[in-house]
Image (cartoon, rainbow, N blue to C red; front, side, top):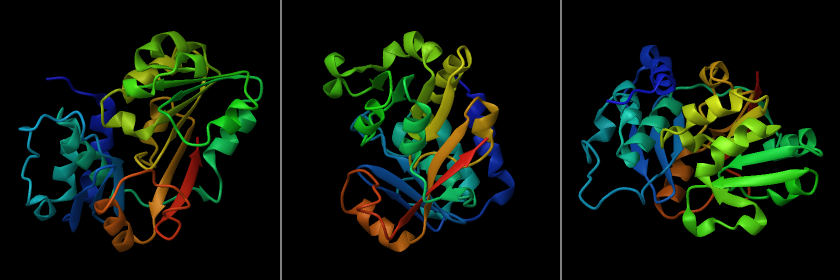
Length: 250
């Protein structure tokens, strides 16, 4: 069976911090696990067949966070989303607040080539300063080569030649993160891993990340209600009372 060293290392981070999961929610856009803290991950629901039920569905909150973290190895991507959220539920908050990662990318990226792995909101303000901005997307419906939105299969061509690469943390769920970081290492890019799925721990630095931009959940009761009742981005506007955005640099 395929094993990822990065995923194994992330799972090992929570081995000695194990607690009983108090709640597990799989929303249409986001998955949350309440362990020692509240951890989040992007829900990869669309890739799951109708009969691919989640392991132990209905009794996940009876398991410990280390056991749930092991779900990250699964190729059932809903299970993998639960696994990453479980890992994030055991990592304490740290880093600077009140800083927008896209502002840092825009400032560092003046007249440079920037590649985003994943389509993030407000990329246009980065495009205004950069020499070139390209977005790599798995979702075929979003592709638009005229606007620089290319298929994810272009990664081998673009990442080694980029000055800055911003990778969605959810790439850990679909098992592409390790490959993407290796491609960045073959060049000399400044690498940012960002989004609510991002584990805010040093493991990603060991694999080539330079900055982590994730979140701290400050009101998990309210957040669980919202992600259980709808979809969409976890924006500072819609979740201002539930989230604080944090940044750690290597």
